[in-house]
Length: 52
Image (cartoon, rainbow, N blue to C red; front, side, top):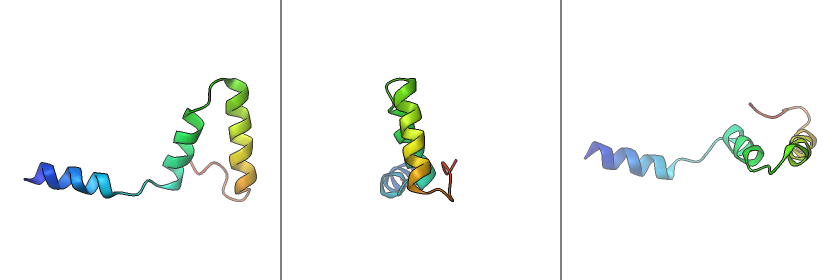
């Protein structure tokens, strides 16, 4: 019963901004795409950095 509750809670959990940023960076296809994504994240929130 607790396993079912844990799975339900995990499914309803909203990912943090750091997790979303990391997932975005992990989707990069090559080094140049990764660098562009890093620049995009730092431009989006210059005072926050990458959030990692």
